[in-house]
Amino acid sequence: MKKDVVDEILEQWSEERPELDTASLGVVIRIMSLHRTFLRQAAEALEPLELELFEYDVLSALRRQGRPYALAATGLAAETGLSSGAMTNRINKLEARQLVRRQPDKNDRRGVIVSLTAAGKRAIDDAIRSRLDAADKSLRGISLRERNELAALLRKVRRTGSTNDSD
Image 1 (cartoon, rainbow, N blue to C red):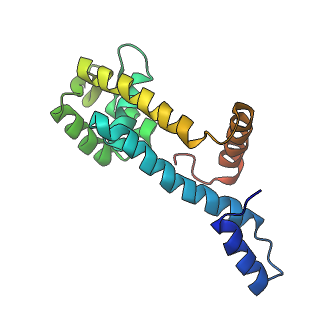
Image 2: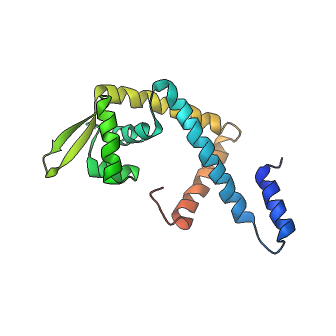
Image 3: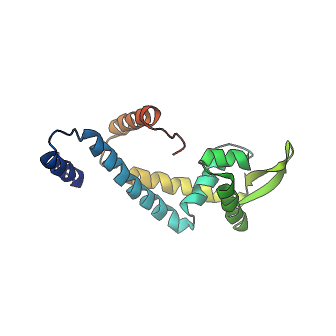
């Protein structure tokens, strides 16, 4: 298999510190690099739809709930891994674009329910297609079997090696 820049970094460390096992660093550096690449690709996929990635995340969380495509603001914050203050800011922006609406929470006087508008549902339904196309393009070099194996390995790393499951 052809070497990449990470192989060069690890080889340099092996020359300087041959007693170190750098295999784990090779995995982590590659994942960190891919994270940056995948974020850029996701943003590019959403750009023609005039959606930011943070908007996609909120709309996606609502859409995945099924009808009536709504969540309490606190649940939405938890679903997206954000603080309540950050979520309020995002809801404000989406509400200004008429992609979501707020309604009082009948079960909590201080709470609000956030739901998709018809325009928000159309936006996220278009956006998920773009995101899937971008993801498929990103992984075009590996087979479906390899994608499933990689997903299983990454799931295992998240469950056993990560200290923060909200990332």
